[in-house]
Image (cartoon, rainbow, N blue to C red; front, side, top):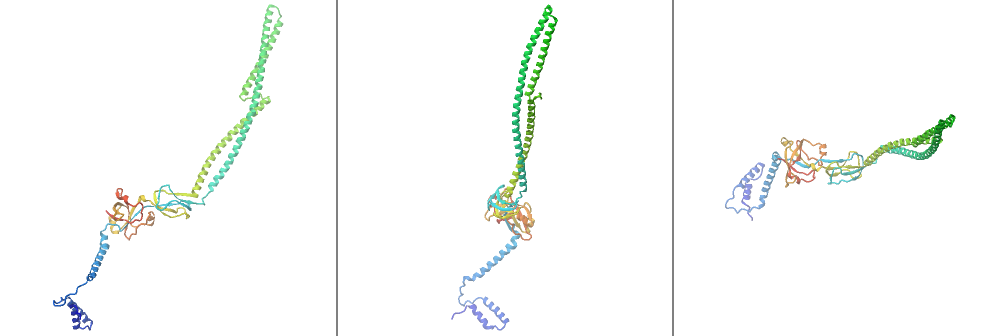
Length: 447
């Protein structure tokens, strides 16, 4: 029969001596057994049984549990009071909302997620078939009316010019004929002047000879008187011819200048009428040409207005929405086919050139935070430390402010403080910051 260990023998003897009849006796017996078990074994007992290594497992588990509780107490109660780090911090950048100024249907989207955008770049095209065209219709009607007036005026000018050409031709014919007739008359008068001059010279010679013969007594005074009378008559005739020739010469000179003084002649009357008709036509053409110039200038101005109005209607019918700044497209809000109202956002982009840090600090650190307070930021646990400074402190971040950024602000407990920080100008490690990662979690602390 296998012998029990000495400790269990003592328990058996104790139970034999003290039967368990009542609860108080049981308690006393248990205390007695506990004292007996703690007593050393006598030297004459059997050799002790070898203990298993698993006996230490409960003790080690107890130590581990105590260590975890101690770490938990330190991390939750003590560390927050001595730490200078923000409870939460993220990278963020201002949002760029590309909106449409008109209502319509998105017919084309040229931007893609993650694609850089430049100022003036076409982002989308919005088609609107309800653009008001009243002004364009009015301008086109005015242009048709003005074009009709121009055409009528051009026809009148062309008719007057043809009539003027015909009148000039008739005038030239009558003018040449009249001048030729006057020149013929003048040539005839010149011939008569020559004959009269020769006759007058002969009669003067006869008169002189008669006077000489009278002095010599060869002829009587009556012969001298008759010779003198003939000479005077010939001189009067020559003077009359001279006057006629002078008048005809002046008429020729006047006719060559377009002035006709001999109104009794039918040809001169015709020339006068043709000259007056020509002057009237020239005056009419001059006035019509002035009207044509004014209407042409008016048509040019009207065409410019029509062109601008057509460009406006075309631009509003297929309006090209352009970017107004640098950024990176993050979200296509209105894809192709979307019905949008005026002011609706088409593409949400991020201005990555203005990336900053949004940190949440506990209320106990509020006294240590000010505008300009220096921060050190780590984007990666093993990365470089970047330097920043606080530019704005806020107890809360309203929805309007958060909508102006690409990523929502981190959660903040009651009493926490939001801190907006910008990178220092001399931060050499800024080159390692991701190009555009709004919402990326980082570590921020005071320095």
